[in-house]
Image (tube, rainbow, N blue to C red; front, side):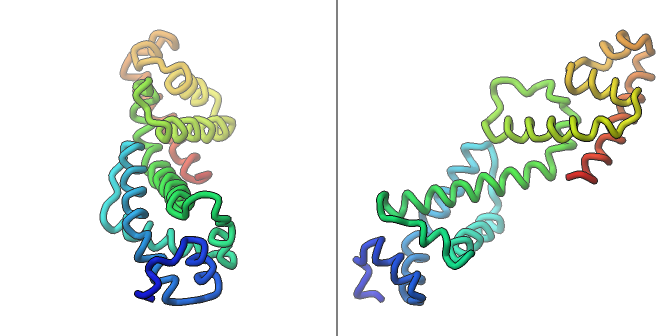
Length: 196
């Protein structure tokens, strides 16, 4: 298809939809650079770094997603915008979804350690969305905890009290409060991992 490298985006998509293998190869070649650029930019914007293996997997996932459901995403291209814009949006969304999944798997423990104490204005939109998702998950798990653990979790996570403040609030020694917080958080962690 070297002679047809000047093919329009709309024609290229049409040929890909017709099952033209050289057209598909041209699409992949033409847009691979864009795909990697958008993935890196999206990760950077959200304070993340994608490893080479992750980039390669996402690159492959992106091109596979164009073929899923009878090439639904390719069929949705109408030519109103440039194909690069259209594909860039799909890559961006795919990358955000991946980062969200990756963060949510490892962020619960990090979230519990910080107890949202430092979730101030510096959070990226992705961090805030993940924090909100985790808060919602914690809220759903709370009824399954014993009442005294719910109280501790409420003070620590939702009211954002320090260990010393919790000890004062409950009339406990600091070490006793710390131990109760750790036990309650561990129970919560197990519940969240079951649900999540």
